[in-house]
Length: 400
Length: 170
Image (cartoon, rainbow over all chains, first blue to last red; front, side, top):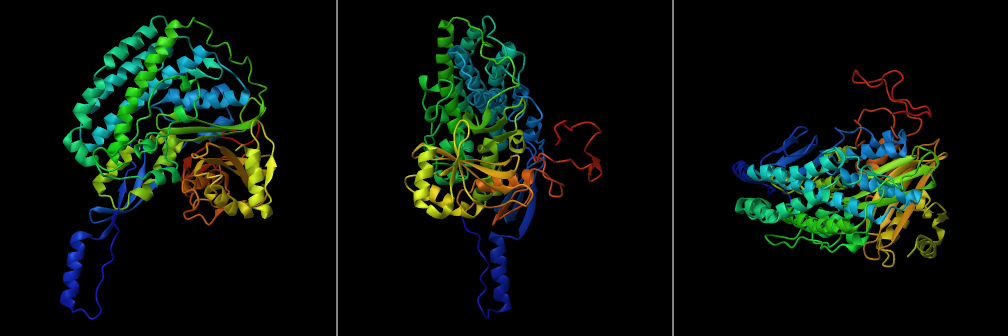
């Protein structure tokens, strides 16, 4: 990170010397200018405004302004009953609804003391990983768009479309799913659905290599990302960056391994971390590449989950759903899950009534975005787009 | 370490801080007086036995009598968690010292708690609203919040809509 310099004019300098020094200084630094990036900017992935103070071609200060999509999710939750909140969590991060459902439902199940069957857990893992892949495809595609590569976007959207079709057959929704319910699932697997997932796994063989050939190891793409916006591991931890952003900085940390839930400890998969293969550990390329590698690992988990489900006898996926939510235990729980964007935490407080007393959603994108004022100074303006794209934010979740 | 162990350990380190262990379902909570918050937070992060380097979540919480800030901490090194609560009675302006110099992630979370609950964080570098517009009236997550009629001539409420029966409203 380069420091911004002040013009140093020696005492008693002649007017000619002063004007020469000024001209030299302005060549490099120029005058300070405030630029509004957003609220409608193609690279902000939603309605985000970043107030940039530029110094020539460099960024001196960056201040994100959020709240354009604010709808007070937490207040609305206080006026809904517990099961009514589940579809509303879909709207937080509309790119990975399953993971949002899962986070909220697991928090409620921990508070209410509900245990679900092994088959329900396996289906939950399967759909959550499918949604993680769909989310990472969007990030990869739109990141290419931000940097200036149009074609890969079309390819990855096509692969993602197959997942949305699978969801469509599963529960009738494509983006907003409301599939995972407190104590179970909304529908059992349709006939032949597992075979279709198997077909998708076969179809995906070799696709990661295609993405790598098309985008990841493209020379222009690497030049734009390598050594840009390096976030050191300790800054990630201080600012609460989690998920692929933290792993991109070389920290081997994944809640699915470190604090397993829903039986993740029984699956065999690895945690990809940033290695600085084309630049420095924690640069934009590492954060991007971690996501590509996570798709491979998610495919591995899906394969294992499908194999288990094929052997399991069908059971009632709604068996553990409570008949009524009018009397629930009092208490408070903070439960976190590994969402596709990082750690999604729900802090729920119950006073024993049908409606929650308080629901706080700790959104991963909210914390990820807060690192921008720390990392952006010293970047070129064009690299700002690379930084925002690489931390993978969805404003529906930031603003709630 | 479990939360009661952390509480005992903290009491030995900081005997004058007035820490209390409050029973709750399913896990107990450590209650910290506002004037001791900075000191306690510093020990929690820097002590090698505790080493809470992650502030997972910071939330505002209104109870029947009090306005509270809830801190959920986690230590990656030791793998233990703890929950702190800090705040004051409702009627007055609740002031809690900021912890954003200890855990920088608190900066935005504290702005959110100020915006939605009206809790003031003393020493905060940027004490503005974060989600609502700067000229918004009231703090929406308070239970007695009544939305303003208009904001810059934009009507915000429809009669009978958005007010729940238990008081408060959308």
